[in-house]
Each structure stands twice: as structure tokens, then as C-alpha cells.
Length: 397
Image 1 (spheres, helix red, strand yellow):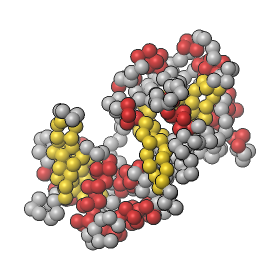
Image 2 (cartoon, rainbow, N blue to C red; image 1 turned 90 degrees about the vertical axis):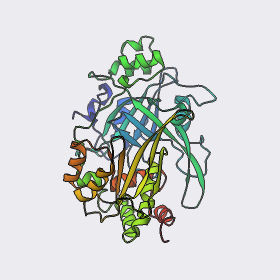
Image 3 (tube, rainbow, N blue to C red; image 1 turned 135 degrees about the vertical axis):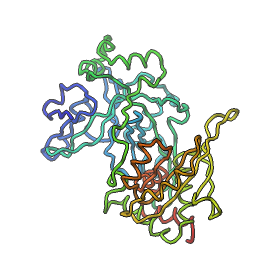
């Protein structure tokens, strides 16, 4: 991984996954993004203006630490989920100090004023180093488009409720990362955008010019990076101990440790929250060969649909008690040629079991402890109080 020293910020190119080191004086001047991209030194949305005071490009920054609004970067699929800046009750959706939600409306062509179809968006995330806690990593050049996702699903206004019971809305935005190739994004392009130079396209990445010309996104244009290691370790399947996520997961385990049917209901609800195209029902202890849920996954339109049969197995295990071959084999043995399975556990899948599923090509979706929490957090269940309220709707209250 390339690390760019703090003193080189003003002249640096943008390199995918490179770390841009912050300063170490202990003040706001340590922020590398402000010097790298000629913007302010705080906030998630940071707009840069050209010589005519027009916005030249947008930078979005995430610390990855906001449990209420968990921004998400999926490097395998090349997509970014980013939340707007109306994060507290009291303001309307668009009344934000940094105008972040107004920016999102313009980027996604939802503004009554004007749209920004050709506005570059650069994404960065917090990446502390030994020298500076302010260091950042460059995620990539984004476009407000995702292959296979409808326009009205790219930017959604979602509701949240604060601890005082006040409801408010914020935006959830979905971007794709452009595959800008092996060469860095040139500093000359950034400088040309800032000066408003007429020849700025000479320095732009070819994929950006292609997207701008087509106004359409195709898979080869997206920076997708398939994982080389598909078998997750125990630590990758569970939240870190002593974290809020770990405590929330333990709440689920304690609630249903003696109530497997209750956990089956929770597991089905979690899968449906993951994707609303799942249609699952609990088997309720009937003669099912040990399977806890049956149903299908539906793909298509209102006039043309395909349903793929699926089966669910749910195990409420102690967080340090891994799921073994015995448990996973029962689900695998039930699957026919065109079926697939979903295995949901509060714990983790033991390495031998995980290897068997992956290496033998079994069609099983694994949702371990950390996956459960991430899915629930996306639905706003992100603290102890919300988790208690959520769990009270299942099993014996």
C-alpha cells in the first residue's frame, strides 16, 4: 500500500487505495484532505469551487464510525452507500449546514434547481497511521449510478427516530466506483477543474469521459475487485469484543438461547431485511428434516417473475461456539440442483465447514454474527435501546 507524506499533499495525484498521511501537530491543520483537494478541513461533504466560485467537484469523506448512519464501501462490487448530513431531528431533509443533501439531490438529478450529471465525486475514508490519526485513504472516483438498480432506488429518503421519539428524514445514496485504470488520477485534472480550464478533459480518466459521453453505466466501467480469500476467519465473522456491536449481538443470543423457535423468527426477519425479495416462512417444528424456514427468492417484474426455492437454517449459538460440519451438512443435504440455502447464526462458521461450502460450490448464503448486526444497523437498530425494542417483538417478551 502506497503512503503519501503529508508535505506532498498539494502536488499529489490520486491513487486508488493509497493512504494520504495527515499531520501531527494536534490541530485542524493536520487534515490532509483540505490540502490534497483544496477544500475545508472538516465535514463529510466538502465542495471545491473553481475560479468563478462555481462548484468544481465534490469530495465525500467517511470516518466509518457513525453507528447510526453506517456508510458502506463494497470493493468487491465497486459500490458505495453514503448517508446525507441531516442526522439529527429538528431540521427538514434539505436544511443542513453543509448543504450535503442538496448536493445529493443535484447529483442524482432530483433537484428542482439543476442537476450535476457531470460533477466529479471523489470518495475518501479515515485510515489512521502511526504518524497521524488524521490520515485518509482514497476510495475512488464515484458516479451516481449502480448497474441493475432503478433510478428511484439510488437516492432514498429514509426515516429515523431519535432517543426522544422525534422522527426525521435523511438521504441514503448509492454510488459506483469507476475503474480509472492502472494510472493515477492526474493532479493536472484536479487543477484544471479548479481553474475551470477549457481543456480539462485532456487530463481526465478515459472511463470518466466515456461515462460523461454515454450518460450510462456498464459493468466493465465499474471497479470491481473479487475477494481472493472467500473463507472468512472467526474474527471476520464476529464483531470485536467489548464493542457496541458485540453487546448487541450478545443480546440476541441471550434472548433466544432457550427459545430456538423465537430465533428462527428473528432469522427470517433479518433475511427479509437484507433483501425484500425473500419470501420465507418458519416451519414451526413440523417434519422438515431440521430445516427452520422455507420459501423462495423472487426475481423479475410485475409481469414476469422467476422464483428460486430456498431453505433457511438458524442457529442461536454462543458467540465463541463455532458452527460445525454437522449443522451445515443438514442444510446442504436438503438442497436440490436449483435450490439455495441461507444459514443464519449468532456465532461463526467453523473453518472446516466454511471450506466445505466454498470449495465444493454449495449455494449457501452465510450470515454470521457480524452480518446480522450490519443488516439490523442499516434498518436503524443501532443501539441497546433499539435492539431491546426490536427483540421484544419476537418470542416471549
